[in-house]
Image 1 (cartoon, rainbow, N blue to C red):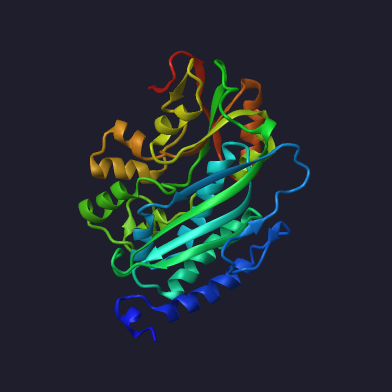
Image 2 (cartoon, rainbow, N blue to C red):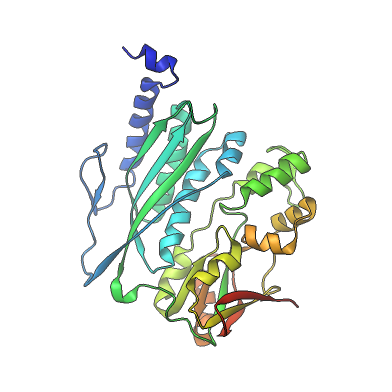
Amino acid sequence: MTEHYAAAGVRLDAAEEAQRRIAALVRTTRTPLALGAIGAFAGMVRVPPGYERPVLVLSTDGVGTKVLVAARAGVHDTVGEDLVNHCVNDILVHGATPLAFLDYVATGQLEPDVAAAIVAGVARGCRAHAVTLAGGETAQLPDLYQPGHYDLAGTIVGVVEERAALHGDLVRPGDVLIGYASNGLHTNGYTLARRILFDTLRLDVLDEFPETGRTVAQVLLDVHCSYATAVTPIISRLHALAHITGGGIPGNLVRVLPADAEALVDAGGWPWPTVFRVLMRAGDVSLGEMRRVFNLGVGMIAVAGRDDAEAAIATAKRVGIEAWIIGEVRAGTRGVKFSER
């Protein structure tokens, strides 16, 4: 009955098998807040008790062309975990605790093994944050995606007490900038990184990434760090948080600055991971472009009073994340500047 649809490139039997396997993964993420049946038209989750004025915080994002590296390497679970961690960080900057997650996988022809691997990574990220994977969508779009290619996106829902939400309005001159270490590219800059590695250097995923002793696939597929455990215990003492994604430090830190304050970042205040030094040199990329495209080793920046900086750094180090004071806020026109040593 579906031979014409299959001839057009859509395999309903594959979709049913993928849905069966995904449902089993979804069950592993159910929390006491989850409500409703798995496989329903929409997911439901309760707002936790104890909030006086709960505010829902929502964000949608993807992992960009990192999925092309995953497809090339045949490793699909890490991008699912990337997606969750990225979205957790995006609502963390507002002080929110994540409640539920939705994923969207679109591909040309659905391969149940690939779909299950992707969602296994999503589920792993959800379990790490006690988040319910409340639902999602898997779409077969053969006229839109090339064979073997897919796109991946997700939506997260979190909650924060209204009076505790972070907006950047607490930032003031004299505050310090605390940089939290990234472990690589996270989920940004992959279009440029792929061009340098695969086209300019003519490397492939199993070749050694220069100066690392690891393969290109291992370096590029390092999972995007979540900063929830590093930041949450001290978040009430922070004035703002900026997740350093596309646009780098200047494009993201500016988003939490008031109109009468500028951030001065100490360009030598932290060590660059090897991956960025290799890409800059091999691609002949200017320092300015590196700063706009990549995180350069800083995945999150907290703005805090100087007296709270030591506690923030110690809290991060207790969960294995290095942190440094990398600058300060001063009076001026809203913007981000770098001081060179």
